[in-house]
Length: 133
Ligand code: THU
Image (cartoon, rainbow, N blue to C red; front, top):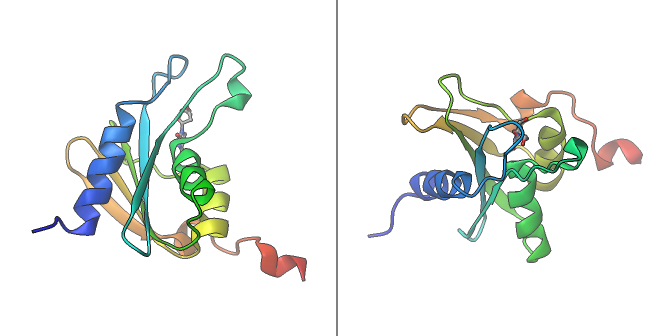
């Protein structure tokens, strides 16, 4: 029997975290997005000596999926090894909102703690293409 999607996506994010390239912050992040068709795309943070070029795990996961033709998403998970669960940064909230809309965002740690919030609560009064009309 296949695992429930929430466990698959958490496991994918946890695995992706092990591939983080974070020699400057030493803060490894893994993320995974699930498409409406049930596929999962994962990503890790990738840092650069020119710090501003760093890519967050969430954006790597979403851009991987989008570049493979995926445009419909149903959930995202973020895994970090911290006691306090780590929410997506402001830039990632904007990208999640624009590409995934009001999806559930699950924040988890390696100890098995997790919390899920809706994107509309993480990014209230969001700016998006609707504002450009
Ligand atoms: N980071 C993420 O990957 N996702 C977030 O939402 C927060 C921050 C990464 C970027 C950087 O490599 C490290 O965590 C410390 O900021």
